[in-house]
Image 1: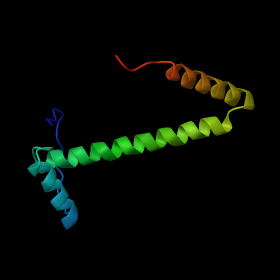
Image 2 (image 1 turned 180 degrees about the vertical axis):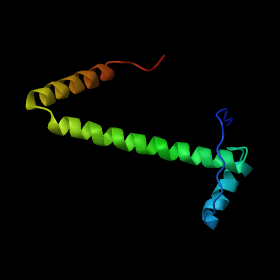
Image 3 (image 1 turned 90 degrees about the vertical axis):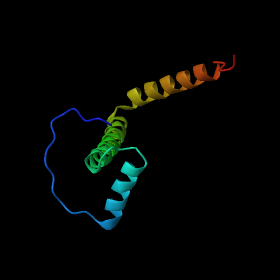
Length: 91
């Protein structure tokens, strides 16, 4: 993983488990350096947070939508499900 953006200096201490994990990322080749390992972990956490926010926002949308909208969404969901059942994935 090559980072092409400007880097910021970070000087800190971490738990022994975290240190071992970061080193394992480097040793396995998933990161080139400890700094890249920290970036990799931070990116993963950000993606998880974004997914959780999307799930919350989606649930809130459906919870707050009028019954007519919910009925239409259910109809569209069923239509999509039915159309997938008709598709053959075999060659």
